[in-house]
Image 1 (cartoon, one colour):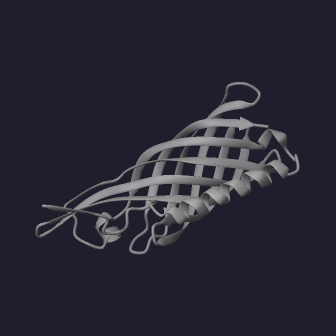
Image 2 (cartoon, rainbow, N blue to C red):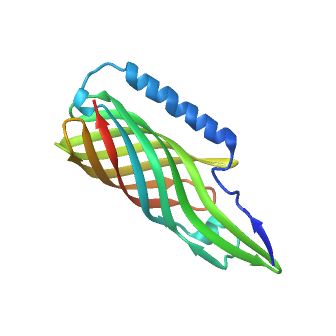
Image 3 (cartoon, one colour):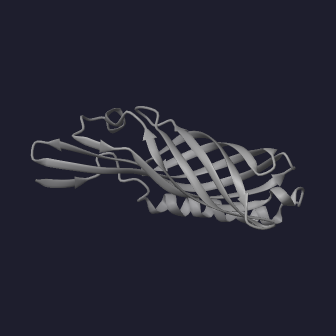
Length: 196
């Protein structure tokens, strides 16, 4: 059987998207360093790994009948929070999400596709209690050949290691307005945060 990768494109393969998002995060990080020290306790740089599941109608997303699919989700993200107060922080996020995998068969043609995307988001984080946080996000998921508007929400807790370092754990979900049907990755995230 012939093997054909990517009916709906193998995502995150586009070099121009990677360069555009890398540039976005570099500029954002530079602005963070220049931002006024309004609330040092809430200024932070954070890195996360994520795992979970994608809630989606896989056949609608693919636009074809599928032989099989797997909706395990994983990824990573870098977040930076800079402007704000003791109750609220504003920042940005760069991330990557592996959304799902599917296969389809057309006669003697076997198709496999991995659906993945990079993302850039503006973030707002609330701190209702010490170490507890709630965050919202708005931005876009960048697929190869398509960009989809996205909103996200998450909540978590920071386990302090010392004055500057902590281990944040959060539940995060994004609503990605993909063309055929909404795509909703739901993930558990754990990482390392440096506050300054």
